[in-house]
Length: 351
Image 1: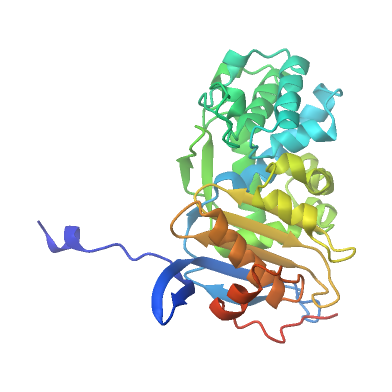
Image 2 (image 1 turned 30 degrees about the vertical axis):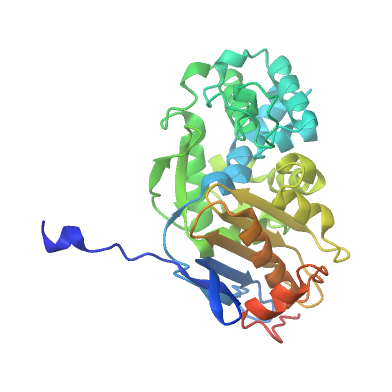
């Protein structure tokens, strides 16, 4: 075997936190963490990095963190073609749902309003993420069912073959690539197939944090002014996509899901927050202006070991506490104080 084949790949992870008991190590969590803040004191208004752990420029698959932008591409056409669709239906189209009763009811309504059949869905039949043993396997239980239904409706609205909605060359994906290239300032994007069968694209931690920050800010008009003509209609829905996600937290994830709880329980007055989980340990947050951070924040977390809700929750809680945006609960207070050493003390960006 050649030397090249025996070398281990260089991974982008850095140490996030460690837990010790009586001086002996018990848990070590690695991954990538990035916090970006808009700095309105800078002439170019570009912003600054508040925290970097790991290689924050390493390419990562965006997975379900892409969903708000996937919906953005479809949104104008779906609103025009299906006026019966409500804000809740659109929220399900950007969700990674758990299979809660309200979520499944709304998905069935989308099927009916679009005159679609269950067999039209090409995501895998599975049991609901909420783990109810009585659930039968169904494509509606798939966390990405709403996104798949949205693409089916888009195909029908354009007179395109619904059965080809997963083809990377379909119009929706071409427009999505164009949108992402414009937003990220790129010429091309690496592409893969997501776990649900839909095309997926790379974004690094810096790019994702900045995009989620933008989602909670009124930037749609500015982006549309500078955009190519074919993206103007897509970007016109920017603020509406942001609002429907924030206004429907129980639909975006589901009961006991981290992104739902973050949006539902965030108590900072008059501060907008968007949170979205992604497969295999991804979490992105956008926070609007706050007295301590006048231009808002974008946060990105990737846990190296994959989907570890407990670890993700501890990390994001520690970050919000140390940023002065949250208070620790009585159960978490000790571990947040002893296990997290983020250098965020005194960080403040005020206008």
